[in-house]
Image 1 (tube, rainbow, N blue to C red):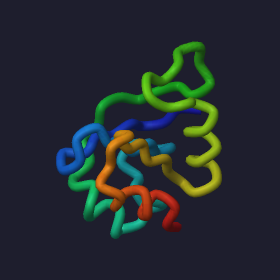
Image 2: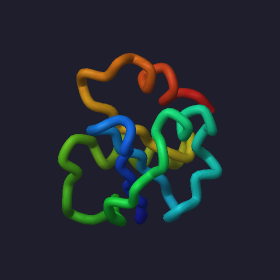
Image 3: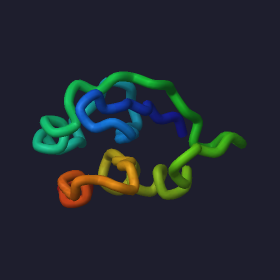
Length: 88
C-alpha cells in the first residue's frame, strides 16, 4: 500500500500520512487548519521492506485504513495535535 507523507510548516516535526496523494478528504478540517498547508515529502510503500524513521509502518497502515489518515507528532507536542489526531 502506497501512502503520501506531508510535513507541516506550522508544526515542525509533524507529519500527515494519507493513502492518496493530495486527497485530504478524510482529514478533519480543524486538524488541517492547525497543520497548515501540507508540503509533500515523499510517497512511501507501507508494504515494502523499508521502515519509517519515527513511526511504525503497521500502525500507520492501520490508522490510514481505519480513519483515513495518520498524524505523526513530535514527542514534545503542545497538546493540541494530541487531541485532534483522534477526531473523525
